[in-house]
Length: 415
Image (cartoon, rainbow, N blue to C red):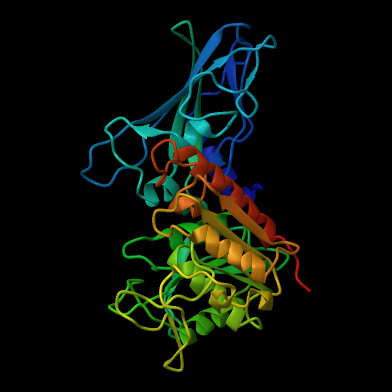
């Protein structure tokens, strides 16, 4: 993913942090980093240099993310062991560890494999996305620390501020990039609140804003974004949100995308298909590619003027006829499926059916992750909602692939 944080914002953060971060030593073993500070949503590139060749070095990472008031502080840690090559340089992007909680060369492995010393789960998007996290790195050779480096992973709340929206019958959170100057930018309508108490839409919208794209996280089912007894989305609310987003300063009204994950994926695809005059492209991983009626209480998934929009009953029967008319979407489509999806076991069948209806064209990306689990749609590089091994690494790898595809799709220019 390209680096897209506003220079002024990141520079200000760097100045503020400089006083509490000692510079690395200029001679002897040391840890070099290409980005400091860096955004929590983007990778960093680490090298250990001037190490004794032929031996082993253990690289340890530790972090103490912000905790809610009254909660006990917790330390999160990970480590990997590398054989030092003849050059004395260990490039974490290229070297394969001999011992690690991940396999293969992975420069961000020490970050997403962080685990709580108290056994806590990484389930808070604010803690592992919104808040800035300090990560301490140590290089250990023969039981002795030979190098150390402190890194700052800047949280989304620092670079992607939001404002509440209560206009035109819609409610949500609007994230306008701090660098919203110059050329018009594609914008994204994100369906939020499609699962009870899960704010992944806000996390996605703030990540998109940090990448440089205006994003509106729409409270899909009401003012609080919560599901009612009937999970029905009035199309008028979506149209109002699209028109509101298209009217915002700096937004390229010809390149507005919709974004939905899990149950929100079908809502994003339906919106793009039903309103090609308002929507350019669609991002819809980890869900069905057809409109499925809510269950267990039968009802419409979407209404127009109070009338039902036709939807299929259940997710088991996957046929081309059940797939939405995705060829109506003029811009890029990004889909994804997880082979180990615990919520939608046949997600890859839905994706393959969609590929039959709309074979991938320029800008499209169909991410197939046979060993990943449901939450592969979350932004990468943190332990947020990662499953335990052995699914952790393929899920993280799928996150990297998916969000790289999202970044490429948003850069595809329309007519």
